[in-house]
Image (cartoon, rainbow over all chains, first blue to last red; front, side):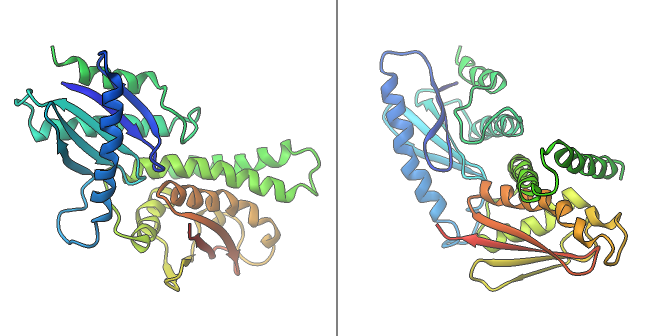
Length: 139
Length: 158
């Protein structure tokens, strides 16, 4: 389903990045890092424009030729970014939403693990498993 | 509720443990308090992550403080903060007229000297919760007459 999944701490450094094995993994790193600007923009827009802007799910951040980039920000300002292939048109907004939901739930478990230091890169097996599950479904 | 008694017992036991395992008991008071506070801080960070999972994004600082006073406090102590005051410049005073962790000590002045150690963990909880929501703060507690206490939160501007 997804080709790249990343998590960023509130100070915008990466906690976790994983992409499908390919030659130019660097491109995915580049894509998710640039998406942070869009995330920042969307967050700072809250409060200025009233309305439904207060959801954690930020929706489609921007489409590129080959990929679509979706964003999600938790209340603790941890950002999740999912990159999917543009050719995958069957993917609905709701599915993306539930993927983020799963990521967030799993992240919460990581956070509540007393052996995890907040701010460290995520090395949890459970989290890794969830992410793998989302990437594999491509078939 | 069945889950509040274990928390109280665990909390009392935690204080006992920290104070017993300290090397020199009398002079180390400050260090024990900060140990308790740091424990609370880590717990607060984790707890707020879980509690805000389904909450909408916060608008501003006051919105966050309200969440602490209502949802966070209810989760911990089965009641809300009784009074929240602010000067709108980063100082918040949270008043609890029946603080649960003190309510099992006798009211009055008798144990007033022992009270600070029962508040340190909670101060840490609040500090940890706020720090995870992106607010750096200093939290201090104040007791005037026993089951009632005040928490002063000083938000530090980045």
